[in-house]
Image 1 (cartoon, rainbow, N blue to C red):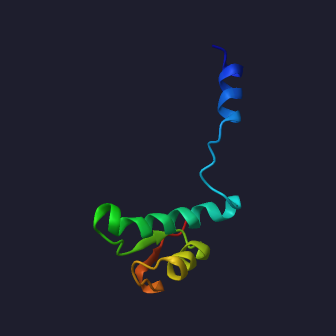
Image 2 (image 1 turned 90 degrees about the vertical axis):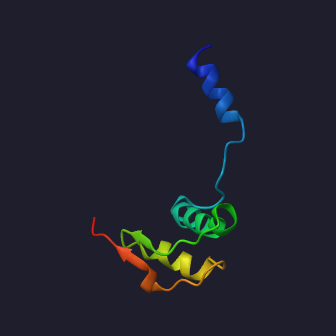
Image 3 (image 1 turned 90 degrees about the horizontal axis):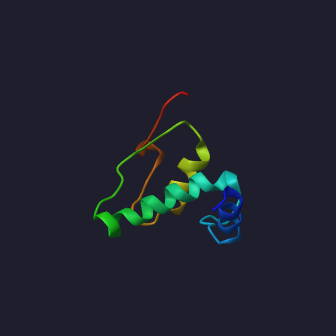
Length: 79
């Protein structure tokens, strides 16, 4: 089977796992992970280490309802 045949099959099937802008993908993924942790693993994230992108931290504080997070739960690494 050629690469072109495989590629057209993959591209024609529905593999999309994110709806929204590319810029919102990281924030949405982090929020989903924080939300799923209690039920899926029986634990909560205690802190988040990021690169200083405030959109991710803001998304956690505003959208994660399973645990109360504040900016004091976040650490940043200069990149």
